[in-house]
Image (tube, rainbow, N blue to C red; front, side, top):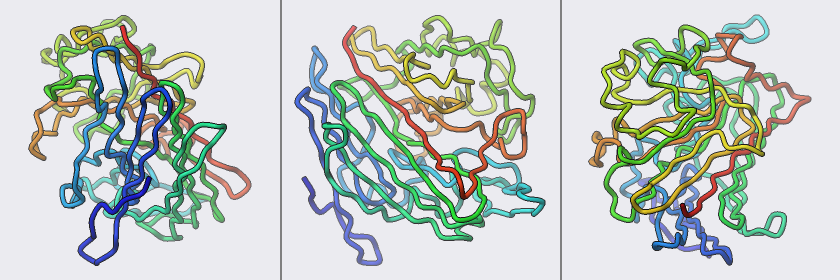
Length: 337
């Protein structure tokens, strides 16, 4: 179903697209930034909108917290907005002090996406597409991007594909803020598990500066289920930097096993995250108070490359060549406990 969602100041019409499946899962997204405005699931204890979203376009203008948006061309931070590629220095726009964040001043979150409603592998799906021109925000190469939001039985599957006509870097993610509560409070009393033994500590700019570090005997050891508040209440220097969790963990890049779980024990609801990406960035909504929402109102699971990986080869390789196709798959499953 397609309906009008509002008009941009330029007069351009923005539409909302809604798909549903037979299991009671429904998704709505708009063609501004591919923003997911609603993701409703019928848990045993009731219908819950599992993401934070707004009912009107005006509330997304602007969208400094990237609520529900597709983020790119490079998710997270690049130090000084600069990197070398094929022996050339590439200078990107700077929108996070002297660094580049989430694609720059006018990243994918602010672009107009073409959207079509169809089925994919017999599941209701939205097909989104966008062409990022050569030089956009300083990035080399014309990048053709396709995204699929697919509703499986009890899960949202997201597929990102991209091709370039010139060597570039690509790191796409979906920036939805998840909550498992009918009454929108905070996620601090939820329990979190992250199946990873290594994370990337960050400096005062929230950019990795020590490579990958073992989580053992740190607040970042979530290999066993931990109440989120028990971690946020600690005065660890890494938690002070970002006023909470805002860090990347190494994944096993396997879609068969979850990299993370969020559990709302009180309301008996849970979700799990699966991805083929090398890192999962977890953000506990530390700055949502800046947009009028409670601090820690929700949590982001941003599957991606590590921040600044293009400048730190030990963190992976985000380079895409013209002969290759970028392929990213992440699945969010919802279930009762």
